[in-house]
Length: 180
Image (tube, rainbow, N blue to C red; front, side, top):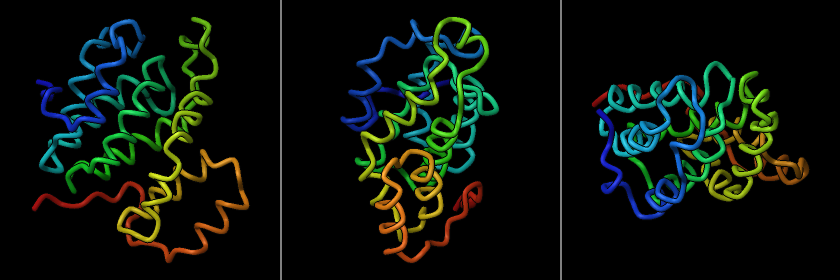
């Protein structure tokens, strides 16, 4: 079961719809499931639901740090969702998936297909939403934002100044809130 793309907020929905997901290789034969899995993650109302969709994507577009061709297209969807707001249950999973994408590198099969720079592509796309990530500093998901920014920010002076300007929040990457 996948999420209803039509129910996703406007910006993220537009990013989902503008991509030909079926043309982008992923682990296994699951490319056409990617948009629904993204929608499911963004629309999740419980930690368990968000975690289920997170793992569908984590075992498809990125697998243990190895990126497949669909990975760069997922980045702007996640950034658009962060602008519009996602549920408290979904947000840590969205940020964790974004971190996995910007921290990853191309899978051997993807590189053999002529796509060795998928990690660079993911980081470049994340830089397009740099201020969205900086906006998370000092909040509940501060540590997640810092970890992502540390991978994507090329202006190290700005990174140091801005991360130093905000007190570190309470969120630790990988620590997920319990269902309420």
